[in-house]
Length: 236
Ligand code: AMP
Image (cartoon, rainbow, N blue to C red; front, side, top):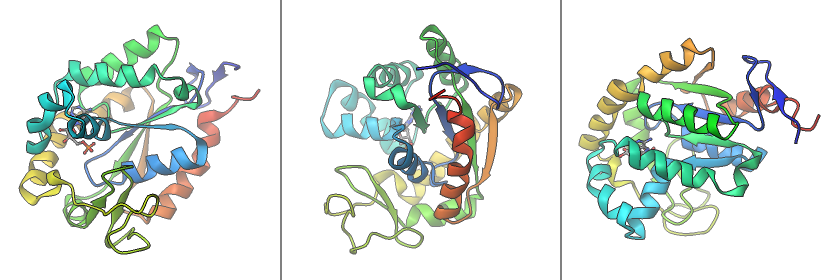
């Protein structure tokens, strides 16, 4: 596969490695699923990976269960190791969309260093921008499939059949950490620890901003329009 000179900031990367930055409920997961369907990028959702560990009662799952229940952040070293394990799988060759990672400056620096060692790099960080009022409303209406992790929203993105996953038919559930008191804490944690990453990526000329209050289809269309800029030259 040819190496690529990106028009975005002249970094040379093998495949698109996109970071989705944004508060809980801003639509990162929904759009990451679309990029997976439309462009075969791996959706690397650290939240989904942690929930899978918890469901399977692995040592990591047992360790992080209470942290997720409170809406706090899992320690950086555990999170980075889990991400690197996932990145080592061969399907990442087509590119990756990081959904919910990095969430701290240390995670962001670790990601860049670890990708550097592999001759890879972050292509762009896309910041999903939306007001707190809209987030609280959206999270209250959110449902997910416990089996394949696809996400729905009773208002903006309802399943075809009420209460059932479109993809596998499993009964949909609300997320424990979407309860109002936990949501408030998750938003606080986001503002304190993750929002500063917007400046971190802006300073490196990697930031792209998107108005996340718009309809799902509009945001999807915008991302589709940007994709050639991210994958430009892959088949050259
Ligand atoms: P999410 O599904 O992305 O909202 O993540 C759910 C929960 O998983 C978060 O509230 C954190 O407890 C944990 N988590 C997910 N990603 C990270 C991360 N990058 N760093 C630390 N904790 C994380």
